[in-house]
Image (cartoon, rainbow, N blue to C red; front, top):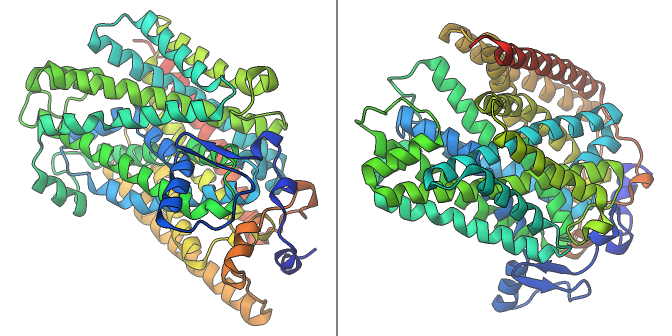
Length: 557
């Protein structure tokens, strides 16, 4: 069956789709409402639409607020303490990137019913399938360690002993997901989302100048007092902590587990926008309040860790300010630990074709819950063990995230252009152009980050050379790609099929057929070439980063 016939085929009923776990099909039982599987397809009236939105809310909010986790707190606090609010513009530039990336994965989840890792395995082969799961597992395991570092630092400020505090947090995170009731977990997660709003009263207490914030949020400029190499690494850190690989895997699987279908994509897009608003507001508040707290103080440009920030807030704005920061840090770390652990458990369940749903009790999905709880126990134990290089682990997370993010974006783009997978829901031309440009930027930034880790003494001239050279190379590749496509279209014109060829009802009912009915992915020679280049770069970069981390770990004090 070619792609044209596939698009013209009858929609696949939800009950006969590609879902790998039968628990992924049924009524939507969200934290704020229920939608029965057989309810009328079209919502009429404002009140009914509002009830539908409330039932759908969750995936976008959780993945976005979960992104403002312990690593984000550390990165944003460092930005504010070292460079004030001059880098707020990076957050404004990341808003469309956040939306486009996460909208693609929510569309993949709703239309296919299959998780991100399994789609990569089925469409691009065992190497990339295994690579996606293994690198996600390692990176997420390290990320969860940073979440418990955040919990430990928050507890230290509050004067609560680490061992019982971290233990209670770990048990709470495990219990929240292990009840066999999806709705209970989502309610737990949304309570944590509300907890993220603790930054707002803290912002009011510190009251940074609003005019300066608006100016720096909308004006691109570099800090005058910082070295370009240091500033660039921090910008890369902002990108890496704001657009993390685990987000792609988590939201796609969570949308599937919530049983969201194409009918509800427009509601899920609104849910995503609400999450983006919260995450950006939180990041802006964090950078600006820390910047204002330390401006003109001896600690300015002398960032240590989140505990140092809490103590500074307590010293200059009262103990209540430090307490709010510590509580917000713990809240962010708990939701981050839950979301990152879930993304890993979902991915492993996808690839191994075992039950992987929060609708199932632990006895019905032993492998899924074993991965989820095992990661949490391991992370909590590492944080509590004396002598573990926690600072080195935190740096390793940021570095690996930066190295691996381009590959995640590449496969996301390829999947969203696969007509056998998404049918009429494939990307449009402008989405592809924007995402391709984002991938190019991510590759350049990843190269800078890798070079800086491997060669710590890299100078500004070398960084500028990488940026300019990478930009020129990306431009040439883009022009060559456009010329090649134009030539092929002129020589072998093919009919174009877009979502507009389908009625709204047909779009809502179209689901990806079961995986075994799909033909192998059709990859052009140029795509195969660049995938080979990407494979070589990733293997080399990860190996060199690993060597550098080991050198630092075993270097004499």
